[in-house]
Image (cartoon, rainbow, N blue to C red):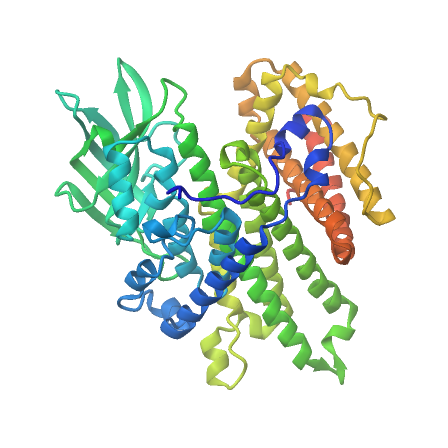
Length: 553
């Protein structure tokens, strides 16, 4: 048996990005929308149900929200049961799940406690269990294998007091005179699990032959030079162990480091894929958990309430919002399936980047809608409802939790900008040839779609071609990459348009496999096309002087 996290895939479909750069619908991906291996799906749902049951027994989410204190021994119990190694093999104490099954476990946990789900996400997405595939044979790999077997709490430390978007960390790694180790100095802040971890992967800047490089170093928190400097509390996710720490001469053996190539301020490619997957686990999965819990609360509320003797669901405005909630969950779930079941992480970096915002925005929109639809009961705390004998649905807490998911892992508008930059860089590498397909030369896999959804597919095809032409023209007009990178609003809009098109493709690909989802796909695509109208108008305002942009979404 392999000791790597495992991924069950339906086929090695091409990247969504390659379709955008080619200016064509990603036909192969649409035709072969991935299906989860049935055994893996059953195993994942079994683990998700067991974890949810354990949390229901051991953790009061309202009490955690009030105190921020996890029950004694709970983290140790989670590790002992394998929840910190969801994707690793049983021989390491793991549960052997696929990427998507592990995502579903985190999502289900978030329906009970977002903070606890995020702890599990950190362990499985950027903790030592996730870093194993990036490590070559040797002492460093053996160290990580030991930590996985021992269920050591861990995390990844990148953000610093100056922020997380600087190309080069202020934390430094200096080689020792004999070259056997690195000495780390610096500070980190906003680090998940920092206050409870036994080992942390720390990003730092080092110099090799006078050139800067990025590296990731496995730091033992028992080192006397490691000091926790802050224990943080957030507006939401109360109980999430997050903090800051200082490194003062911490020694890390050379074998416990991963270093990138010269220049560019980039982590090793394998580590970058892990980092992006972590955002989907840490933000996307909890966001979907919040969305599902809000939908449950919404349906319970509208079923028991009436106005003038008329059930709430009989009112069009209420019915539309409840139905929109179902469609938005379907959309985010489709993107997660498309992204996590399709291919190896190294080939889906762009999709992972988009998926973080798609899922996080969905969680926020639904949580905010739930607060509004519940009226006074939405803004009211669960404790207040309980005191007066009302159903204590925690809409206010879920909304706070959801808002944080649009910020952690990088604030949403910056993720859109990064996606736009990623897209234009791909066009620049291809010298703008992606606009070659003629506007009328369509080949769309309409089979399996209703006529209205076939129309949505043709609209997506046309918008993908339009995006290709727009990107090719931007690259042509701005051959200096620095000029393009400075156009941040343009980049943001390109990122948003890409996310909307990925959403359309994902739901239509899924609808081709399931006739029962045709109406949901229609609802999603209709809403996406309305948003795209505004985004295209706004983009025209940024690229064509004198055109007034629409307000930001």
